[in-house]
Image (cartoon, rainbow, N blue to C red; front, side, top):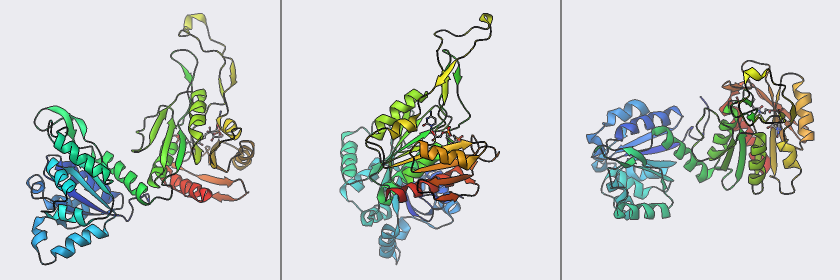
Length: 403
Ligand code: PMT
């Protein structure tokens, strides 16, 4: 399993009385699978929708209810849970529990514990038509936001009443993404730093329907963006179209061509601390783009190419450039010689060399085998790893270079 920001973290999950309580079981499962130690507190209303056993079965730990509030160790329990936890997430959170939290009411185990807790608080509201927009709910929300709570959602959609509107709890995977953002911001080494990551293969048009592109899936770049989020960075992900969802918390800047990517990188680089160019950018592009679709009946076209802009060289020429600039080198032969030449010619602090001749590394696959080459001549070869793990090593390295 990948080490993530969740590995070994103690997460307290509060579940309140909403039909979305079934989604909380999936969230508890996903958190546990990510390596977190998950304790669950159900309110009395939550117990009408789901049972403690549901959560015990997925977390492997006892789930708490209000019955525990009146036991002999009650004060130890709520103060202990509140103080030992790295993050409290309440999902789903009803309008009633939001109101209690906003006003400091503490009349059940969850709200007593929330009052005692000093850790980051993530709230995923779930309520029926009109309740979220009600002035009282909005006032409570504003109070909680002002105190630093992370309010995630709700989404628009079908509500339990049959109405359409704002009130659906976010999907568990999205809540998990927001938990990663909150944990990163709370203690990550890159909190307050801006990191730019580029991802995917650029698309250079030939005519309105055809492009010259490459096999980059964006997986390595998106994993880098997630690793930067986990360390608390403000992440700008400049990406070509991919089949992937952007990690929760990144600011996505969509681009297609090398020219568009260059413009986006130069605009974002002005106030960035680090730039990581994982994108596979075209070296050549068609010199002319046909205004209309090229027709077979006109014969086989002769396509003349010209150089596409070199983004890293353009960054090297800027006076205001990020403190750390990282390039990638995808090579099928003479890997280290070619990578080291690019390190120097593009004035990089670090280049990540991938041997794309192997079937389990480079484009498209889930794993990568890379060597890190530093401007000061240091070299570090990593074994075959998941792209998430490679990303974590690169972000730790960027963090040290920034320090
Ligand atoms: O997306 P995946 O399927 O997960 O695959 C990952 C990857 C193989 C695409 C990625 O890990 C990788 O190696 N990316 C760089 C691929 C590449 O274009 O390498 P290059 O040797 O052509 O370029 C060297 C560096 O210069 C790169 O950082 C590149 O972004 C940059 N470059 C290249 C061309 C150009 N016109 N401008 C640039 O800035």
